[in-house]
Length: 161
Length: 131
Image 1 (cartoon, each protein chain N blue to C red):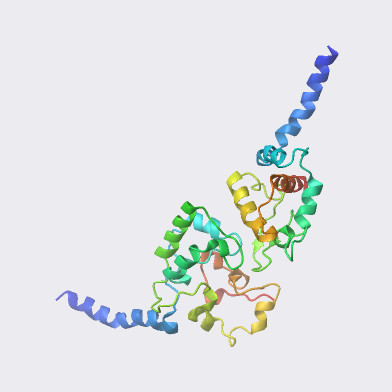
Image 2 (cartoon, one colour; image 1 turned 30 degrees about the vertical axis):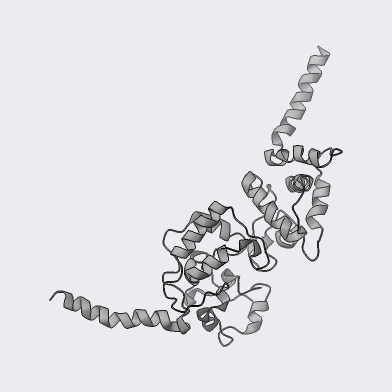
């Protein structure tokens, strides 16, 4: 009965795993946020104007939608060649959040339930976003020092004046 | 003998200038001539005016900064953008595909149209002149 300890472990841990997928109404970022080996093309192409947002921050379906409309990328033209688009989409979709159980697929990370909870008005006074040193919720690295490495640990945050 | 000397001196002076020219900028020359038969050469002064000129509320300078030697800052997001001037950032204007890609996107963003070959060449002339 060697499988018994394994079974007990699985039954104990399963609710934890399932709970993580249901947290934030099913809109939870993935763990890990990105694989150890990231796509160089993604880093280069998606990290020019903003940091390359880790694939685990949104579900695969969000990335699919986003990548199919790059010429209208939040008011900018971010188009890629067909080959680049395909390669980057594959990377994002393969590494989208593994803890997102909701059927939703927002285009903005800031619209996800996990983001809104973590950055609620109680946590972050709304006028923080207006500071020139921060400027926008899209500017993760303004406060998350290691955002470029997809490290958003709450112990390594420094909100600038 | 004098003519030989003159030729040698001319070449010695001109060749270094030609060698220092940017191949990507050169590639726009023929197209600029086709666009406008009266085209003579690219101009850093025209490039600077083009760089700072606003269309609506946007100019190249809006994101790339007033000085191409310094970091720019994305107008909407706030992320730092590395300097445009090759004197501050040796990578600039060395990759033809990258240059074309960004002209394609950003001219559309700022001007709502493609940039002409002359505009591109003038822009690069300005960037090359910033020391």
